[in-house]
Length: 467
Ligand code: NAD
Image (cartoon, rainbow, N blue to C red; front, side):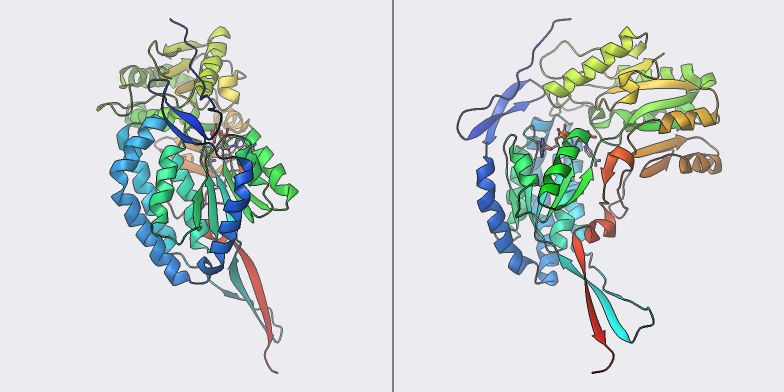
């Protein structure tokens, strides 16, 4: 196979940096390369805008509904741009935009409830909720718009203002989204900043920021937490995952194979809560490997804008290198590629959908988050072994159990150390549910009312019953 050395995004001296199309590896546009010093003015404007934005919840709800309408109306412009810079199939880009609008609508209707304390004292103590001020939102490249809205929709609904920084791999659709949403908001309420590091580091530690909400990798999350701590700023961290799927003895392999395959390979495996390891009773191991491999061999891989594409490229060159490296290491350690096992010999960052059998359990493709279209399938002897293996990780985002006996499946799901456990499904999330990883997968809670309260602070008023 020809060896290619994909170009990294070159930094143009001055004000812009190149954005690459992962389907070709070529740059196709540029984005403003904002410098950390520019953040002072941006954050000052966000403070200014907060004064009036926090004051009127009814006007806020109206504005967020209008913003959702504007996002839907701009879908035809947003979706191809998102696909071009991120790589995902156009239909998935459209779904991401629909989800973004839905999230704005969901949070537009949420209102924090005051709470009267009933502790027997002759005092009326009421807990009310106050906004925080400018919130920094820093997001990765796998779901740029959906994850951005997961930050800004609850933050804005709570009365905060937001400074949003997308990944330099996917700045364009987020910039467009920012301008579309801002048509419904007062100036300064939502600002998108784009640029390369140390822009994010500076934003996370900026003294004018009152809360940092970050989604990304564990190492960057640690750096963000340290930066936020320097200015004693609250930080919510949604970090990586290495989700396990545990199949039970009574699983109907053909019945679940499609769902399991897509739970692992959707968005080219670049989903924080994708299935990244599958544990299968030894008796069923060959059947499951075969069922998944057959799907991996027939799925249509191509540019996201090509009709018929089911799986796009990996988003960027370093990420592709990581996937290749983990796969090569597993193969060198004795794994067998039942499908794929290599990058594709074509321009762009394409990797063959890969199903691995006979993988040593301590191989990095099992123990680390490879975040790509590669799936190790591991046999187990008994359920205790399977649960122990599933939990033997520093991550704790999601997990799933697959079988016919739903009571048994739920009992096994209860034993998984993670934030969300599914039965016969994986990575299905409601806007109304809390989203929180355990262990290294995160700090804090997003989603649903919990996400709203995570953007507020309690304010208590004590008032005596008489004069
Ligand atoms: P990343 O950590 O490299 O980058 C995330 C964001 O942080 C980007 O905007 C990046 O520019 C910025 N950044 C980089 N260095 C920074 C610093 N020192 N200070 C502040 N910001 C900085 O992650 P990535 O490679 O873009 O995304 C993939 C990771 O994101 C995976 O680990 C994946 O699991 C995780 N992720 C988690 C969730 C979740 O909800 N838990 C969702 C999606 C992705």
